[in-house]
Image (cartoon, rainbow, N blue to C red; front, side):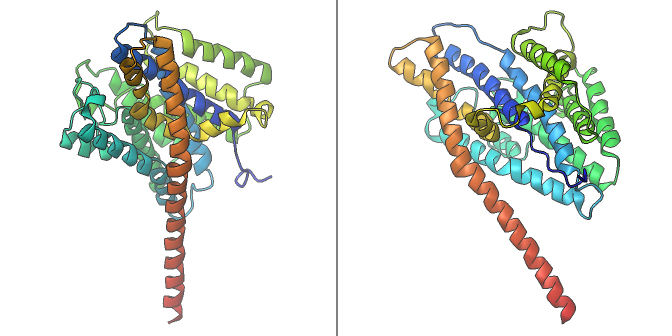
Length: 358
């Protein structure tokens, strides 16, 4: 089969998407319970490493999805349009939902205020210092999308300039990583993207490169690598005070590459709900901060101060709502935009044909 026409579908990647989103949800659920119940309870911070997994996956997916575009006419426009359609509409909806909540149910929202300039910038993925003094977007989890959009722009530039994607994108990301080592602790929003995390996109791209070349980790080594990297991400603390890219980025990369290497063994064997929530992971990631805090709020009203129960119900609410959002908002909206885009394209083509005839 011609490699250019080969269709790549990875069940393992969908499972990792679900895992990454769930890790973040669990970590945030421990925070929500700790803040809103007032009964103590330890928080679990390792789930934040789900973001590192997401970034590696993103780099991999961009290489796989762009493989047939590279070198074609308007490749950079097509690539950027697809990414914007995938990311922007649902992010805007989630951000607007939080604005409305803060307007009418302000007592339910912590760590946010109606700063309209901050909100305006957030819609365009421009971070600002929030009420807690942290650099982020109005929608808290949106800070990761600032990194994603930066990566998409760099990738788009490499296509537009007809540059080798691995050399151009890699060079830019390595440069930004190096700048992170001279960034101070109290840095401004201008330094936000100078972070070691950007290199995780490049690691994912390299996995994509090796995958397209048919190279993978041998089965037994992949199984061992998978479990060791997963355990390390879930349960290790940075006791050695390692740089972030070594502490989180390398294990996340090993996890993703080992999973892809085991795809032939995974395919068709994963539960349907895992694949579903992998597909719905973006909805889960964006909307869980908007609904999961309801669990400890309701339990507090009922004088139920159980930390585990709060975490369980936060996760449950987040998954139920995200399934609804995916099925009734994200999926139909994305399909509608894509259909309209194709309709506009066909209309232009027909107009051009008629113009040539006349």
